[in-house]
Figure 1 (cartoon, rainbow, N blue to C red):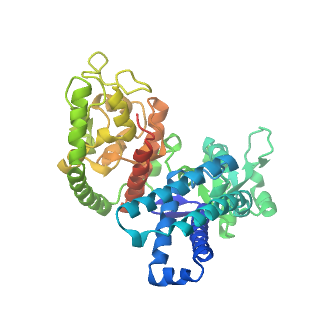
Figure 2 (figure 1 turned 30 degrees about the horizontal axis):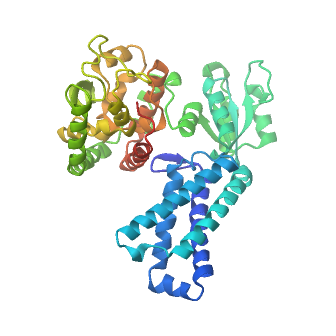
Figure 3 (figure 1 turned 90 degrees about the vertical axis):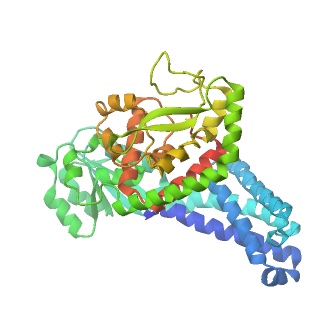
Length: 459
C-alpha cells in the first residue's frame, strides 16, 4: 500500500486502475481501426481522434469509480456484467450530450463507438475476473505477523482476510494465551524462531501490558535485520483510515513525534478556498435554492429555512442554516434528538432533500460567515455535545478545527443514531484532523459529489 492524497491506496487497486484505463483506450482504438480501416489514421492524427477516445475512456473510468468497482473487487460475474453494461451506457449518454451541444469534433463516430463498447464490455469483464482471481492473489506479497493479544490485531487480521486487494497477508498470531486456533503460531517468546521460519516483512505489535511481556531484544534484532516493526494503532490507521480511540492513550498523543494536529498552513489555506468555493457555489445554486424554498413552503407549513444552534471551532456556538426537511417545530416535545431511520417527522420532500443532501445548501452561507469550512467534522447540537463530551473520550478534540458541510466521516460511514456510530465517526474525524490537507479535501469533495448524485448515505 502507498499514500496518495493522504489516503492509503492498495497497490493492486492502483494497478487495476492503470490497466483498465489502458485496456479501455486500446479497445476503442482497435474498434476504430477495424471499423474505419484506412480512414482511422486520418481520424486520429488530423481530426482529434486521440482526444475523442480519451474523453470516452475518461467517462468510463469515472463511471466505474461511481459504481464502487474500485472498492468492491469481489463482484460476481453476473453482477459485474450488469454494472459494466451500465458503465458503457453512461459513455453513450455522454457522447449523445456532446452531439446535442454541437461538439461533434469531440464525439467518436457511431461505428467505432458501438464496436468499441462491445469489445470493451467483454474485455473489462474478462480482465476483472482474471485480475481478482489471479493478479490480486499474486500481489499479496507483504507477509506480516501479529504479536500480542490486543483486540485491534484481530480486527486488522479479519479485515485483511476480507480485502486481499490491500496486498497484506497475515501469517498468524504470536500470543501467550492458550486459545486454540490455526492462526496461533506460538508464544511471544518464540518470535525469532517463527520469524526465521516464515520470513515476514512486517511485525505488528499489540500488547495489553508491555512492561512485562514485550520482547524488546528480539524486536530490536529483527528490526535491525530489515523487518518493519510497527504498533497496532499505526497498522489500524493504515488499514481502516481511522484512529482507534479505544486503544489511544493521552500520553501517546502528547508525546507523539509525528504530526498529530492539523497543519496550520493547510488550515489557513482551507479557509481561503472554502470561502471562494462557497461564494461560487451560492451564485451557481441561487436559482435552485429559490426553487427549493418555494417547494418547501408549498408542501408543508412553516419556514423554508431552518436555524439551529451548533458547536463550532473551539466550542463556539453558531447559528447553522439549512432547508427545513421536517415538520415545523418537530422537536417541540422531545428537545434536541438525533433523527432516526424512517423518521415520521421528515416530510416527503424533506426525505428527498436529505437523500440528495440539497438541504445543506444554505450552509454555504455559514462558510462565507467563517463559521464552517466546506470540509470538516459535522457540527453537532450543543445539548448533544455536552452529553457526548462526558461519555466519549476525545470527543471535544474534534472541535479544534472548523466544522464542515461534508467530511471524511460522512463519506466513510453510514448515518447512525447510536453511541457506537458516534464513536466510529469520531475515529474518522480524528484521522481527518491529523491528515487535513487540500489533497484530502479534494478527495472528500469528489466523493461527496458521487454520494449526492447517487443519493447515498444521508438521512
